[in-house]
Length: 475
Image (cartoon, rainbow, N blue to C red; front, side):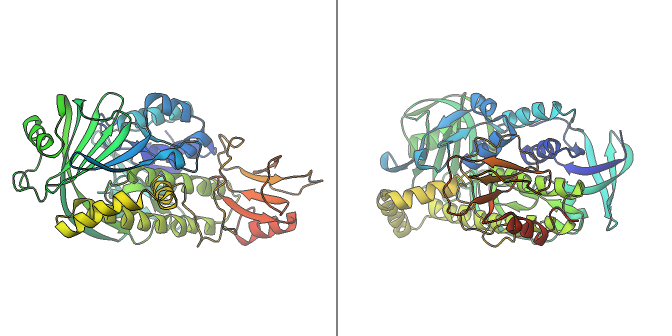
């Protein structure tokens, strides 16, 4: 195997696998390593939101993902056994107006199977032990089966999680804050008073419970920090979960348990997502509460944003400055996710009786207002993300929703136009599309490889100016 590679991806979870696949689709050579012996066998992250499904559609395998998962229609919120309100996903501004429940093990298998089509295989049992950025490339030391090897990569991306070795070795700093809440969780087969097509959130004075159906099981999470009977537990078992269910959501029967775990919440944000030739993505760059199921999805969107930019630079279609926009665009989004998920967690788990009352009244009233409910749902499904502070976005309307024509796009741009353009002088990576359904008074619309609208324009001169200004297609 070659000792010189364009990109080394460290970490073969969903984020690293998605990055490696996106790079391959853009024609970029990469290697992907993981210190684990094999892919995940547990469900871990299970919620795939609409924006991630849009990305997978562009990459060409969304139908396979949906076939392996379970569509969830809405979130129901209870106070004990009383239904306070519900929020349906049919108001999501996407063709994927649902939440897909897909266990992480299946997500990883899906991505690994797609990678094999490009003759790219995860190198398991391979640890990153050292890296040094030479300002031109990165010298890397690996250890596999107690054998040391050395390679050089033009770029390294750390997708290796909360305890990231890449982040440590490359000298990134981060700010962290631990929340006090502690959860136990299980994946189990349930019967009785539980929905098989909706997320159920049950507020209770002893702690919130969350039920997320999967095809074969139901994920059950119980917050125990303020429960006098269980607050000192580190993990749960069948007997404990049975008691908690009987007290907080009666009528649910545990038929069998497949997996038990627990977690506390760490809120961390790296000070920068780029340091020279090294990048961070996913949990290595940001970690937060699982509330809203945005962790894995945010990381996958990190990888989607970074892949096409790396591809342009590696193929000499853009200058190095393009890569700075990765930090500009994605760090702000991660910071927003941390604030939003942390806020949801604190409100959901509060033991203050007055705040509990206000929360329940608010859920019962505010979610009944269509405008507010739709805004919350689209925020959780991440279809409202925009990069208003980015030099690469010259418009307020940023996400092009009708992506039917734009599957398997790699690092290709699209220029939408009503009319024929005679003798267009454009780089090869921009494809002209005559769009019969057009919504703007301006005749041209430039769409980035990740599906976001870069700009509207009256002429090709403006398009060329945008590319030059952003170091794209340099002379």
